[in-house]
Amino acid sequence: MCSVNSSTYQKAVDIIDLVNPAAPVIGLLINCLIQIASFRAFNKIGLLKSVFVGFFFGLLGLLVIEYFVFVQAADKSYVLLSGVSNLIAYGALGYCYFHFVNLSETARRIRIMREIYDSDTGLTGDEILKRYNAKEIIDKRLIRLFDNSQVIEKDGKLYIGKPALLLISKLISGMKSFLLGKDSEFD
Amino acid sequence: MLVLSLLVFATFLLTHITIWKIKVPIKQSAALLKISGLTILLFLIFSWPFYGNFLAGLHIFIVFISLVLAYLITYSAVEVDSPSLVIINMVAESGSVGISKDRLLDKLSDEKLVIPRIDDLKRDNLVYSDGKYKLSAAGYLMTRLFVVFRKFLNLPKGG
Figure 1 (spheres, each protein chain N blue to C red):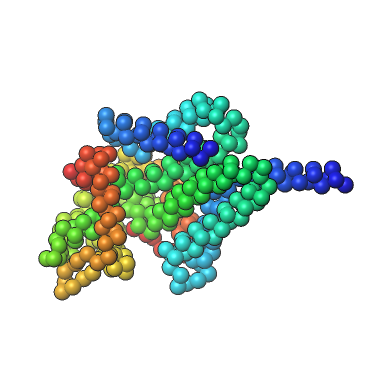
Figure 2: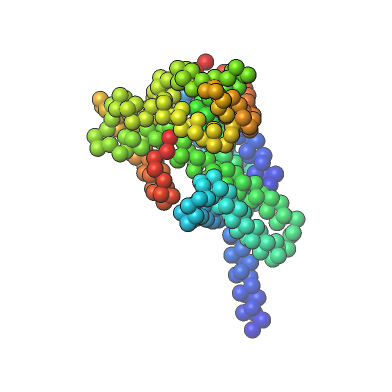
């Protein structure tokens, strides 16, 4: 009886050891499933909130796995550091998923490919521009910027509202300048 | 293991910056993928005495790939001007005077916002042209992924 129990226990430990490296990926899977389910189930949640909800539940899933790893581990300090690695990896994967959702919503190249995908025989440059052009791009972005109060409109003129996106813009400009030696792709 | 994961990512970043300072590659994302692949492969081979088993190596690999993917996604905003951030910059530069929407449209034309992206798709072999633009196999797969994803969410086309 004791050998069966210790054998079962050892199998559980082996499974936990195998699951630990994959924990961030498991967290990401939970993140994706919950995000899609919550967005479909609750009409008013909005895409951004559903991404945060998904991230939260993915993080919970990761922490549950880390708890079981920690409880059975002989070397607690090693497992703690391993847990920190997993948290960093999950954060990075969650960030990637957030941008994947954002890309599906805003990316121009994806939209252009989508227009070509939807056509039967391909599209000329002019046909692409009839379906998707600078005016639509600017209109959509202004709606988002107004919704998030990053830009405000007063007497027909636009002004900066909340500065969050402006700060991000300066950070990206700094990176462009450092890595590419220019502030804009058109320089 | 945490230290090894962060060390290999730091090596990747240093290699990337060094190469960029010599000459920025034409296909930047593809170059970053190659650098990351080579970095992790060499690192795992030569640092084996420090981590010593397959699971630990797998762990380092997963953490590294997660960080590289996050960096690649951020880098896409460095490589290409985001229209939202360009709008924000133009509004900020106008200061207390403000800027009209018509002025934005004047400065941000199809030649600046759409044509360069079509050129990127051609350069990256996601579309080709035989008189009309068509999706390559890779372009079709990528688009299909997003189409299916948007269908799961019951959302229309983005952009």
